[in-house]
Image 1: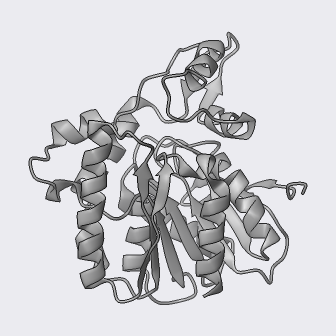
Image 2 (image 1 turned 135 degrees about the horizontal axis):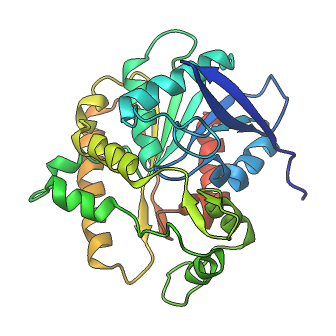
Length: 296
């Protein structure tokens, strides 16, 4: 089945220009706002969104500030500001009663948004948290800012040639090797210079600002404030999991126990044997979960 046509557009908010993708002009479809993770971009939702359109939904994916083709100010790389940005974009695009779907850091943005904006036309009717927005990092025994910074700072590919980066993505030691569509989305995290090297849209100092916001974010306090249904989609790693993956898995299990005791309308569905970049690895499964949740 051919993929639906994607439309690239821009909207202004707080003197900044935000880029977004939309897949349909069906104004009757329920709006689904797709929020990418840190250092990522709206393109990662392409394979998921095309399936949502076929189910009659109306997906839109925004580039957060500093990401993709959106404006890149020097400040505002914290969860609260990004959630405020998102609320302005939802309002400017006239998206009433959206379902917010966030991946990783984007799930934290969705959680913060839903915990503070509980009334009015911009209030979400539901949120989907994909392998994020569940745990509070400082609640894990022995956690420290230095340790979190080390774990969450990704490998640096700044200045790498496109050829070498593609070789890295397809290397045998990786648990998952992306297909052509996934590679296109991953490359959109970077500006490709004239000499065919990579330049990240989100510089390392702004990435660090965002991680610090994540470290300070009080996830469990947000649970108490939610007034809409919540779907959590945590990931279990491909076997055998490494040490870091095992720690993350235990952290998610503990967080979900806390969430079950606090969130009134909570649904949890584990995504088995996959990777954190599950949007690109298993887009069909993600889309099916969103479709079922939105339909309920």
